[in-house]
Length: 229
Image (cartoon, rainbow, N blue to C red; front, side, top):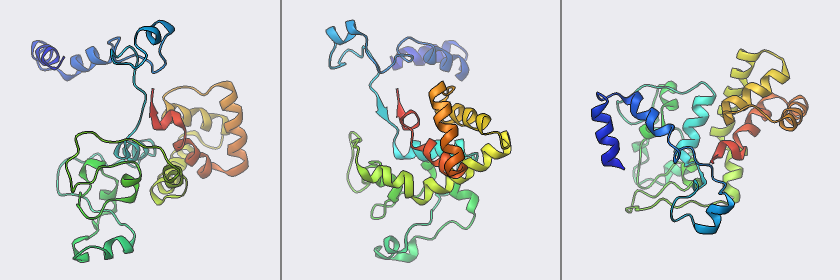
């Protein structure tokens, strides 16, 4: 497959757009995670890739998606690694705490996760809870787990709450105070689809009860946001 795509890339004049179009319009790329009855009968374990293997986003992908949706993502490329602020007790565990010097420019804190400093003996709590591998050993396959700490991090963690508040400000900025428009716009941004009628009614009721910040945080906790189907 890689040889075929490389050949197509060259023959198209090295145009990324043509390559992307061929990939995303292929039947395999557009597979759903729900298998048909016939596929389940002949390929129950999905060894032949008869349907898409549903997966949760990695910690880096979740953080980057929240940055993008909240309109706070800093798209700058290259440069030195970014050091984020973390709990002092984690820094104090380092052999030399002064090594963890937080980047002065706050805008740098909103760079993509690939630019965050990777240190063997200090892992960012948000990434660790979503199964980021330890850099002290080699990792052939990234494990994927589901446990209560992940929900707690997305509901109570500083990153999720900070970006939910920014998302709420974006919704207000772009949609005003119309709760129905806010809900529809939020679903388009978070799930890439329109809300179902039942989702629209429930979300509007929830929004009017608890406020926009809590609604934005709830959107970040949807399975439709966290999982790729």
